Each structure stands twice: as structure tokens, then as C-alpha cells.
Length: 178
Image (cartoon, rainbow, N blue to C red; front, side, top):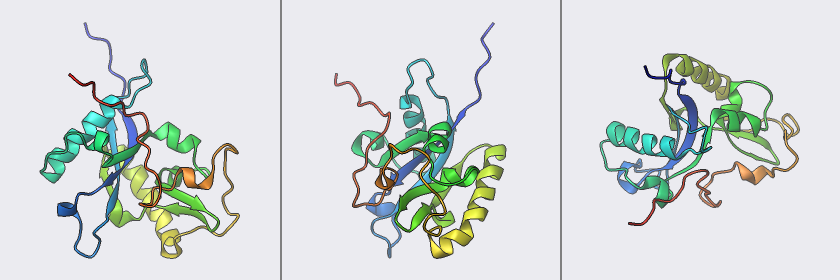
């Protein structure tokens, strides 16, 4: 008899699109991708989720995505719990959509730049969060002082994923060379 499987974990990653997938007027385009996959709680590793996302994107976008994590096209792969624990905003699922924070406040992912590969339950949560942040995105930032950092050890640029910022590949180990 097999042991019961734990439910999949919600993840968020940023995907820097290769030129052939970018819109003509946006040569440097990124997607904020939510998906669900198994998390290795024993090894505390997102490596399996990284492989699952590469395979998912290959099917969804119809192209070879092998090695995208190692090449830096997929980066900042975080579990829901990590996102919520390190968020700047108030309580709520809107924190899952935070993509940066600076002097003007918290920046949220725009609906047009978000892909959801999730269960119906998580889709409803994320849709509600996207709707809640839509008004904020029209001005793009919360008013200064509206959201104080939750953890003093973080700096505002830690969650900023703009092209001018370093792109760490959190928790995605390199493939062993044969």
C-alpha cells in the first residue's frame, strides 16, 4: 500500500522570455508564473519543482525549455510560504503578487504578465488577489509608508526582479556534470 501523497505546493517563479516569445513592442519581457508541484521537504529543495516547471512550460508554450533554470531564464522560484513570510504588504494573498518594493511602496505583478498553471482553488485565490491589486497597478505603487517591511533583515531590492537587478536562482541546484 502506498503512503498518501501530500498536496502539491504553490510556487511562483519569474520567466524571462526568449526573443521568439516576446511581443514586438516588448523585446525584454518577463512572466510571473504560478504553478503547483511537489516540494522535497526532506531535502528542502525546489529542484523537482524547477524540473516540473520546465516541463510544464515546454507543453504550454510548445518549445524546448530544458535547462532554463540553469541558464537563468527561470529564476526566483519560491514556495507560497516563503513568499508570504518575506512579503512587504499587509496580510492577504496580494502578497503573492509582490514583485518589488522601493521608496514609493510595493510593486505588484500586472495581470497581463501573469500565467496561472494551478488548481481551481488556487486559481480563485490568485484571481481575487489580481483583482485586488489591479487598482494599485494603475498607479503601480502603494502610497509610501502604506506597507512597512515585515523583516528588518531584507532590503527593498531583494524582491525586485527588474532586468537591471541580479537574478538569483533560489533553491535550484546545478545539474551534475557526467
